Image 1: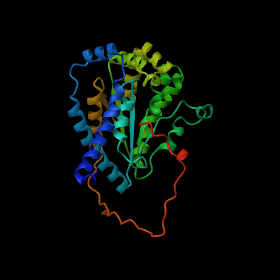
Image 2 (image 1 turned 90 degrees about the vertical axis):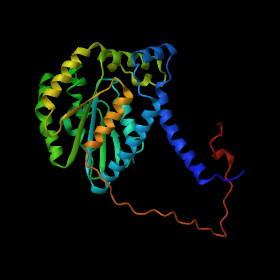
Image 3 (image 1 turned 180 degrees about the vertical axis):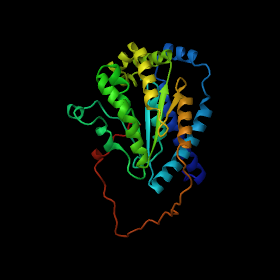
Image 4 (image 1 turned 45 degrees about the vertical axis):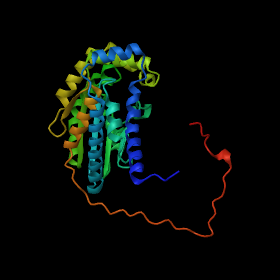
Length: 302
């Protein structure tokens, strides 16, 4: 059997890249036929898959350039993702970070506060996760939990909520003054779209873990969440850190629009890179590779 030519090898690598994207997209396909049919009927104007993948790869390539610029110039970037349950925050974060260096870009998704954390200054548990120079931090939900779920579900008193609204503008101004580039996204979906996505989660074994008792409560309290969101925008949409709303009914377009907008929020450009030359392997005439016992190997089932 002949060795692969460089062209064959490159095509195989590119195909593997596309397969990785396709694999992620297939998570939306493990549905009952009936749910899948209803979803297609309610989303007739879906973006062609080829167009979506083409734009996704282009934007991800630009995000790598942004990452390199942040790392080179020791910039600090915080991106907040908020929105209703099932609005598409996680999917957007996954596509943004898919090809980035996890040592530069990391995701913070904090659990509910512990009893100890409940006695701390409210913002205290978020501060250790803020970026150092050369880092990008994406918050999958953030300190805005107090304005949303904590307020609606009664986990915070009205006095605590009002104190949050008094404090958060100055807290975010402090972050910006310290050199952090702060970007805040709200993913917005309709009542009908959320209902459809919850039904999909119920019937999709790969997504059932995403459906929590709190999610079910959010359906019951849709109007309360709407009022809380409107109040949050009014009190926290400041010039130093404005909100940006991402219409999310079309998941693919929402991801691409968010990625494209994020690229405009950081003035990145080319950075110098050292030329990389692959060194020759050193061959030692005395070197012998030991034969390892077969039980050390993962069974080859595929």
